[in-house]
Amino acid sequence: MNPLPRLFGYSRPYRGRLAAAIAAMLIYAAASAGVAYLITPIIDRVLPGADSLPYWAWAVIGAYLLKGLGAYFSAYLMTDIGQRVVRDIRNQLFRHILDQSAGFFGRRTSGQLMSRITNDVNQVQQAVSETVGDLLREGLALVGFAGLMFYRDYRLALVCLTSAPIVVYPLIRLGQRVRRSTRRSQEELERLSHITVEAFTGHRIVKAFSAEAHEAARFDAASHRLYRTNLKVTSTLSLLPPIMELLGGVAIVGLIWYGSQRIASGVLTQGEFTGFIFAAFMMYTPIKKLSRVNTNLQQAMAASERIFEILDTQSEVMERPGAQPLSPLRHGIEFRGVSFAYEDGGAKYILRDVSFPVRAGQVVALVGLSGAGKTTLVNLIPRFYDVTGGAILIDGVDIRDVTLRSLRAQIGIVTQETVLFDDTIANNIAYGSPGASQSEIEAAANTAHAHEFIVTLPEGYATRIGERGQRLSGGQRQRLAIARALLKNSPVLILDEATSSLDSQSEQLVQEALANLMRNRTAFVIAHRLSTVRRADSIVALDRGRVVEIGRHDELLARPGGVYAKLYDLQLFDREPEHPVESAFERGVVKTGPSA
Image (cartoon, rainbow, N blue to C red; front, side):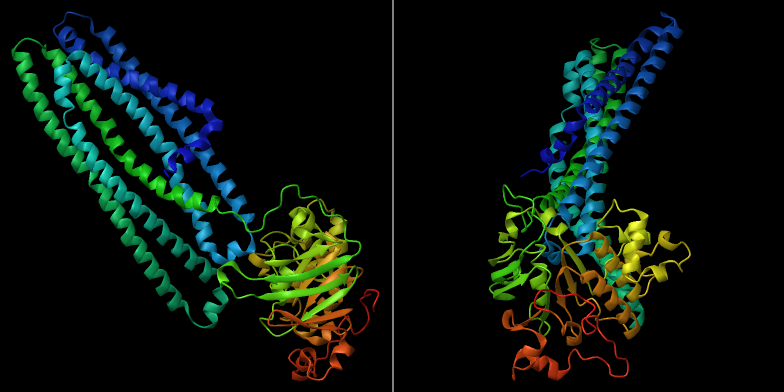
């Protein structure tokens, strides 16, 4: 399916500007034809002295003035329309990508998505503004010149235009080649963007392993492939001017030969023939521009196809028709026969028939070896993915029957890999609560034990923290993430190994902040250190995607040969004896649920 009609459909909201641009183009075309028309009387009447020069001079100046005004306003308005269309497409594309599920991002790299939003959309902008503008403006001018030529002598005009059909076929063939080459070029540019993003975001690892030369070699190889592909596009585009020059030369030779015969027979005057020749030469510029229109449109089609591929991708996580807002959590959450498999994972299930209830206010710890399915399980609660089988119910309501916004508004998340943005500390804390006041932000920071280090920074809460918060330590970033979750004040909390990468001192501060965060909330805790979950109301042990044990610490430890007992005995999550850190659970700071 040709993507151009869909692409140009984005210009419908700007029909008024398009009509004004077309009006300016008509003025440009009429003035251009008028300049050619004035050549005949100037040669036949002014040069012999039959007419006054000033009158015709002002006529020529007026025609050129109208032509210039028409060219300016048509170019300006078409560029304005093109930029507006590009803005709309880019905004829609960005929002559409953000609305996709976690699986969508797992299947695509950041470089690929960035390339669609930047490079592909820029390619479209040229088509919508410059190419379409040239097509309409020069096409109308061409019609004006052709009309004038036929008015002067239709036989001579037919001789001049005999080469037109010969031009069409090579233009079509070259256009198809350009389209294929352009798509490959965009794909190579996409790979280059991916390599760049990986190298820049992982610059510490690159330096630590002295892999600068390796990354430079990867970039050089990708850059060379892009160069070769772009060279193919350029070689194709470079064929057009010589082809047009050759065909134009053939047409001019035929025109002079036939025109000389018409003058000798007295059918044409020298002024009429000169005016005809002038119009024919003036046609060359529009024809030359139009010869590139097809190739530019083919490039835009290649970029549009890639954009619409993303826009036509439907998220696996969709709101059902008639979805209702979720009421605040009152009773509890239930996992009922939950199974899950990634779409691209075939029949390999990550979770199988997981069932257990969680009462409101309880702290539930999820334990198990790496790959047991702990993180996947908690990712199903905010519907980052949808269950493959079974259901997750909140107060007896299937979470697929409620709106995504209301569901996620009740869930706060703190993960091991803290995600912060290149903004001020205050804006990062208030990220999920844009209407929060400064006093509320500072209160959340105090509770998260972050206020102490924030006030020591040069600009306090107005300090920018850099990309992903790189200007802060791991513990500081984690406490900001906890403050963000505190300010959101969600009744359900997910802690995914929130302290596993911290040193002992930082862990103690973060544990105290987490204790404040979990107070009176329903919490799901994933932790490698079993000491951090000993006082949880319920411990769920997972093994290969199945629930194998449920109970409290003492109960599970008393089961010889059990999964939890083996984990504890192997000391996979044990604390370092020389730097003991008493967890918030062990000290009883967290007020757990009814079974505590």
